[in-house]
Length: 214
View: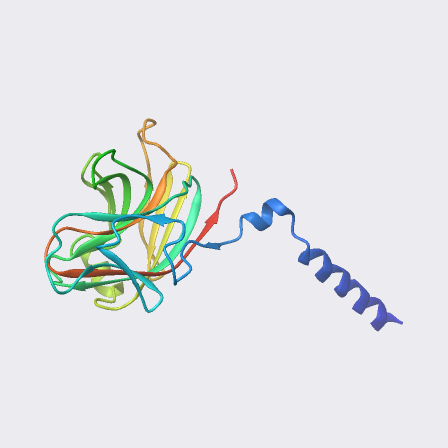
């Protein structure tokens, strides 16, 4: 009898857990990129393609004439985003990154907003694209040399919650930043970048995003 009672209790608990409230279900991590199409994204597709289930910006055949961005149609405020990234090309000059809380500049190829940076001297750093145009926070070089996988896939996590922004690279926190300026928008699009410069490729895959409670 006791065994039956315990079995019934466990079954009831499991059943209850399986019926998450709708709001909670909506907060579960969702794919931002299906690995096959650019559905939900827009940008210059002459510079971006899909290869091996990844978004690829740029080429190793010719120099990159200008910064280009592939952006989500949707906007996000508080979230945790996870993805894998790889940067190929001249290790001293190749550059790219993931924009967030970002907007396109009208009639221009550039965007304005935060960037989780990629590239020599910038990996794991928080950059302010087209606004303050500077690194807001970043890791020490010795830390990067220890955790970065050059010319290979790296795990990037971007967490933006209110004014608090945290970047994690390969499981190590590289930025823990609180925005001091009340005028900086806390909502915007997410974009992936290939930076102007030598022939290079920025690879992005397994992009997921989980919205956070307010």
